[in-house]
Image (tube, rainbow, N blue to C red; front, side, top):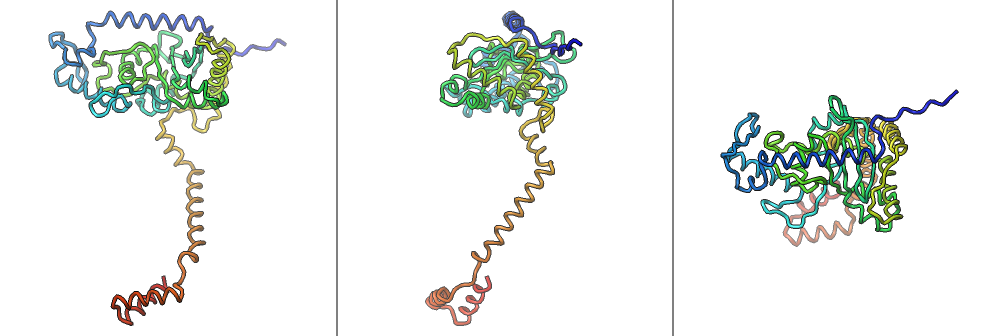
Length: 363
């Protein structure tokens, strides 16, 4: 009987096809953005050059209306808040030479709840299709109702060059790289119109920069990443499967010393998908993507956590009781004499001294 071949994931595709598709989408986005220049609330406009006669609209406050001077002040305040959060500004002063990037776990922690929920429900497949130095091109499934089969996420690991040469094993170097800061990009509309501007001003944007304030889609600057990026970050922080891919990145870099793009074969992509699914099934955290605070609360609710807390309390109580006889003991005769002499010198009566000695002996 012939052996039935395993069904290949619909997102798996030859790397050259994925790379070509991504290039076309990112170039089309750049061309569209240039064509929309007249409808953009640009950095120059935010700096005070906006002409009210242009009549640009916003949804700030929940209504579709014309942008006002007060809106511009609110927009600038939101920009300052984002930049302070990501170390690009101290007070109202920009930090010259501030380092960029963001941690993968921060992307999840700062994401909007609805984006995390969509990532959990709708995005299930993450596949690295190529690597070039510290940059990985990743595809994901697109989710229901989309007019495309996959989306493209680019991740630049900022620690790559450093860990490549620091003398640790390739696996240790890979783990350090993944735990370090990164920059990212995605070709989807959510990233393009809601979050690319935030990534640009926060200095963790990998793709083209965006200076157009999201006055209609995201005027309150809520959230930080689309569902595709969130699922990628959850995969990066999940453990073994991406660790091994990153280990291979380091080994390739150390062997070739080249920034040349390296394709991930269809077979390797499929293997990655299968390993991630196995890892997800074994995970004690479950498939739901959660923030650090949510995971902490989940751990606290576990019976095993409660047993650990109780065991720790009992151990501490036992330690205190066992040391009590040594720490809390009666005053010795020489100490009695010294205390009596000191109290007499200070004018205490014999009755007062006797009471004090009795209290010390009981203590």
